[in-house]
Amino acid sequence: MLNPRAAEGDLTAKARIRNAAIDLFAEHGESKVSLRAVASRAGVTLGLVQHHFKTKAGLVDAVDRLVVDYFDAAVTSVAPAGSTAELAAARDEAVRKMLQDTPAVVNYVRRAVLEPSDTQLHLLESLIALTRREVTTLRAAGLASSTRRESIQIVAVLVRQFGDLLLAPMIDAVWERVAEYSDAPRPRLSVTVTE
Image 1 (spheres, rainbow, N blue to C red):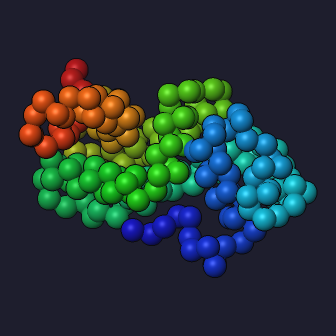
Image 2: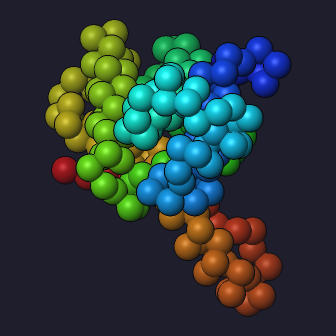
């Protein structure tokens, strides 16, 4: 899968700033991170951060676009082939692998979705737009149901792909406390959406 973050040696100052921002926002939450802290982490001046992004809102928007690019790269890394169920499973697995490999994206999305503010709802809107684009494309290609409402399909995809991401900390905490009562492997979360 193409890494939207790119290799450290190939980055422009603007990309280094954005990458430092996602790391800090994921660790501490966007509201607790100053532009000065981002500049320090990126190894640049505050003036350069302001030159590239103008405001903190501009920097948050760039981080949101990076996160959407990660999801887009994961989903489009799977060629549209096979049955509807096989394609959905393969794309869900690509997203799961991407999230496993990018903890900053996981933590950023958790904060944005579970602690929504006006600025953080932009990320959710962007992910909905990406999902709608993919659902529309797959419906037109005959690879997704055209009898199920599109809105339900969008919700179902996002719930499938975000369910584990958002609930994993709770599942881990519960499993740590009950695993001693069972020799079974850790259960996997499965979330479905019905009309």
